[in-house]
Image (cartoon, rainbow, N blue to C red):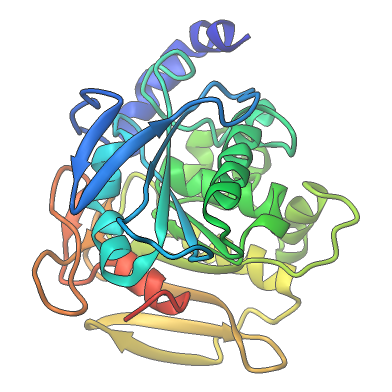
Length: 329
């Protein structure tokens, strides 16, 4: 079934390769040196219906019960490089948490994109979504973690909203970087319309798509933080606006920001629930194109390494996400 899908949509996937982040070298082996420890591949983490690969980074001496961050790469990227270059491995050492790095394969998708746009990979209990959920369960079992957060770039950002919708009980918060709302490809009629134009949906319709992913689930829902470049021509910034509509509706709050300010010189908006807690936040990275924001250096708010589609804009997305989730900062 996985091979059939790859053949049937080869043209689509090749085009998506140029659209959804990439350009990093392939992983050289099952284990790779990273910071003070190793990024290791984990096998036998479940039935793995989506045929993904699981990598993880656990800092040396990490106490039991520390949080987990699941971080998903973009098209043509790989799990190990993305974990390092985004800054997540660096922050794991600094703040003390573990990182799960799902890896796509060319057998599933010719361009190593997570299949955020296909029904068989985005429904609870099926395909790639189920594989990522099994990785989370394995990491919980191995580390005793009670809190798990999920994030990703571009196609990985699309899979982030998939996990938040299909497995909301598993995640405390999600961070979408240059990504897309849940069900956007179906709402727009194609992934390309979703990426370039957005989908014509009301906030209620957006929210209903999330609620339909796990019927009967009443909450709590993961919080959402979105970072998106205002000059992104690959996944248009309208997708950030649509994400706000979708997840404010899910959380039962209005679509007007309760607080606005700037972070690192970039506009930042916060949407709060009745108790005053932030449930949705956005960072509009002025002038940035398509990619993961990083701020290389040794300062307390700096992290990441610039590379293709990993962009030095003097703000590190991983830092802002981790700080907002209470991991450190």
